[in-house]
Amino acid sequence: MDLQSLILPLLIVLLAVPLFLQARKQKRAVAEQQKLQNSIEPGDKVMTTSGVFGKVVATSDDSIDLELAPGMTTTWVRAAVREKVVTDSAPAAEPAESTESTKTEEATAEAVVPESKAEIAEPIEKQKTN
Image 1 (cartoon, one colour):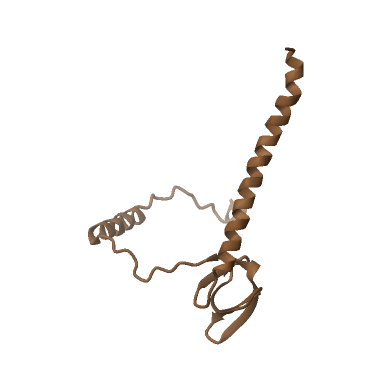
Image 2 (cartoon, helix red, strand yellow; image 1 turned 60 degrees about the vertical axis):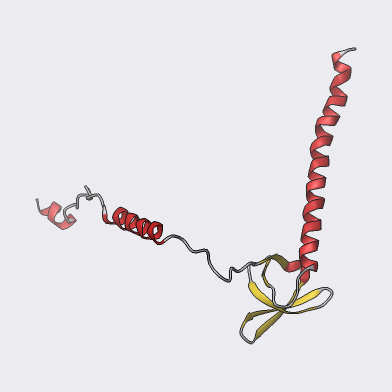
């Protein structure tokens, strides 16, 4: 078989495989985003696509009401929700020794400041008189 007759099918395969994989990845991302938007319930803390954080106070089929501050509620389209914000009720406890040793290392690193070798030039008026 001639090598030139294999080039066209090989090029088609090389172009088709990445397109197929990209389509699968995009389909999976859309399904995941749809699942997130359908799972939003009152009480959830969310972040919108514009970076606004709020607490969901009410939902409908295509919109949600977010409480941005106490007494300040705004209405958003469900598609504007980017992600749910997970807040830890109890932060993980770190050993006290490692925290204190890190603080002392940071303090030591900040305390060591190399001396500047910059020189200050004489004022221009003084240079003119000399």
